[in-house]
Image 1 (cartoon, helix red, strand yellow):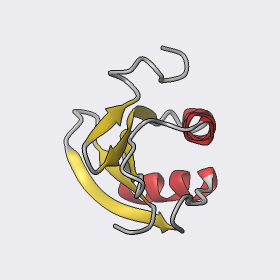
Image 2 (cartoon, rainbow, N blue to C red; image 1 turned 90 degrees about the horizontal axis):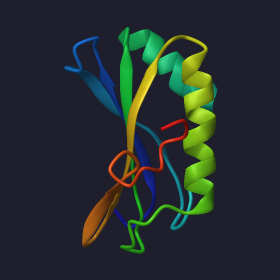
Image 3 (cartoon, one colour; image 1 turned 90 degrees about the vertical axis):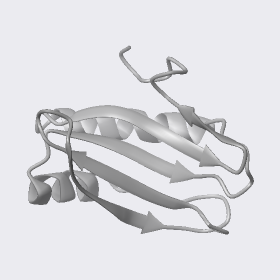
Image 4 (tube, helix red, strand yellow; image 1 turned 45 degrees about the vertical axis):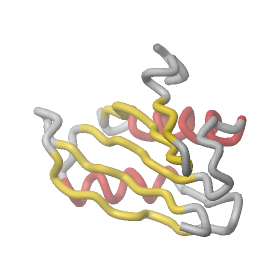
Length: 108
C-alpha cells in the first residue's frame, strides 16, 4: 500500500486464526493505533492471542522507535485481559521484520 495500515490477526488458544482485520489506515509514514480499540476487537473475536502486522511504505522493514513503543503499549493493554501478543511483523517491499525473530519483543 502507498500508506501505512495496521492489521491484527486474532487467534484462538491453539493459535489458529479466528479472524483478521485492518484496525487502522494512516498516512505515508504513520498510523495511530489505540490499545483500547485492539482490546475491544480481541474481545469481540474471543481471541486468546494476536499477531500485529503493519507495513512501511518506504520499503524498509526495520522497526522505528515508535514501532517499539507501540508494541510495548499494546502488550501492556493486552496483558490486562490475558491476551497474548505473539509477534509484531513489519512488512516492507523487500522483506519483513519479526519482533520475535529479532528478539525485540518486550519481556523476551
